[in-house]
Length: 342
Ligand code: F6P
Image 1 (tube, rainbow, N blue to C red):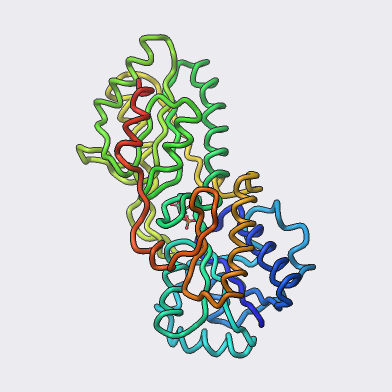
Image 2 (image 1 turned 135 degrees about the horizontal axis):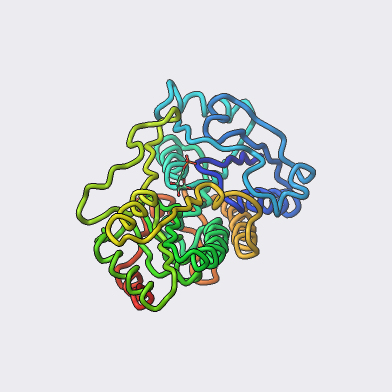
């Protein structure tokens, strides 16, 4: 049995831990051979295969990013994509494929498996933690830790100058990073994409914080939007890679706060720092277990399935269950944080 492995979508701390665990278990326990494909589906479309054995995975557990590279290429939008994928899998003598990725990568794996008979097993990843069917995705814990450390540091500089500090964190559609890091870092306002915010209410919280002589920290997810509209995005157009740039809410909000309250405000956009560097212990643990269980799913012939965390168990679910809808922050959970606002 020869197993192909690829990583697609935005990189995420823990990808290398999955690759290492799958290869170690597959080689040692099942006698499998492994082949990596470079840069997600793009490398498979272009037939860019690389050897993936025990020597190649040695020492990669604590490394961020992905040794295989990644891309957001979707083979269904490429010319003759499915035929090229089938040809390249045949050429590399691949019997089954482990696809590690988010919504898009897994959606492609589900279609290739269900509609074209390509034997795929999925492993969920995203720092955003917004994939259904799994309690947590690896990468999320690392991102929350990075954001929390940043908030801790911003508290002291905010206090020194009695300024408002707005921290923009990742999360286009879901506010998990904002909510978790905001609570962990003792933020005074947390704004998430799931619930539109009222700028005057935010300003009232800020003023109440200043009244007790503390400088407020506002954590805002990149996808959060004001209720009243009027927010002008820095750039709503597509970039060279076809992504819509939705950043800008942090800066916009800081200006509104300055104008409406007269308090000085600054913005820190954490951006890709949240995705870089070594994974946390939790993410290494989760990613390692996902890798081990993904190879078991291949061994059992459980194709079209994805590994997922439920409590402390790793289970298998249909890939489609994870991609059908996003897992967003429940209003009741967000409401819990409200006691700390202001
Ligand atoms: O989905 C993961 C994520 O990090 C989002 O939080 C963020 O909006 C997006 O990827 C950024 O994508 P890119 O790396 O293409 O700028």
